Image (cartoon, rainbow, N blue to C red; front, side):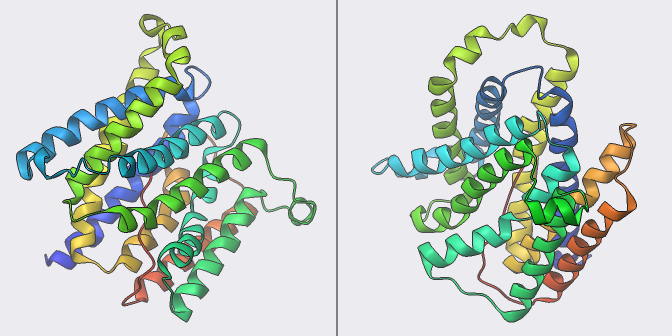
Length: 302
């Protein structure tokens, strides 16, 4: 198997694992505050990535001359994850996953604003098709709801989280000073953990940790170890062997994977009319995979 095929396989696994965050997260979103859950999630992920960074490159490669860079990036990522779980308190997992597919479009906008990045016509077409599919799912396939812009509260909350995620992607390229990706990510995770521990300290203290259900702990370690640390490794491998457009393309598989997660967890699949939007996101994936090169940055979630 060539490195390119292994890169595609890595992104298939990546998108499936990220999708689990939506289905599993929705199951416990109302059992623990998003601040408390994500503060511990960042701490666990920082420890795991920190060990990996020390073993591979050494943590001395972090430039502490400008620590504000990590605070900016950690803050953006913390906003994304916290708003994701606030959104999942009311939004259906498939709808939330559809909102996430808007991130490449938003990332392209921020990429142009911050880095003056441009894209090809095929990329623009794929992003437009993916966005239309996402909107169709978000509004549950109801043209009347689209016309009236009747978007759910959870979807709107998570949308603003996706805006923060989209800003994060080009900011990484803007603020990185040559540190290896794993080392740079460790700095971001530590900063994000510090921010959440301070801002969310009240929620952390109020949480009765010993009384949490086993499911909450399963989800907590899933999002920290699988949806964060493991997917980071897969993403890094894929970016070394695939063009960024093809890495980004797998974002559009998220709603499809979430549907499979929902079925596996015993919940009903969305209606056929809603599935039309999912088909559009798969079409966008196909177009992006045919795109040979692009300078629109890849995205990451979980």
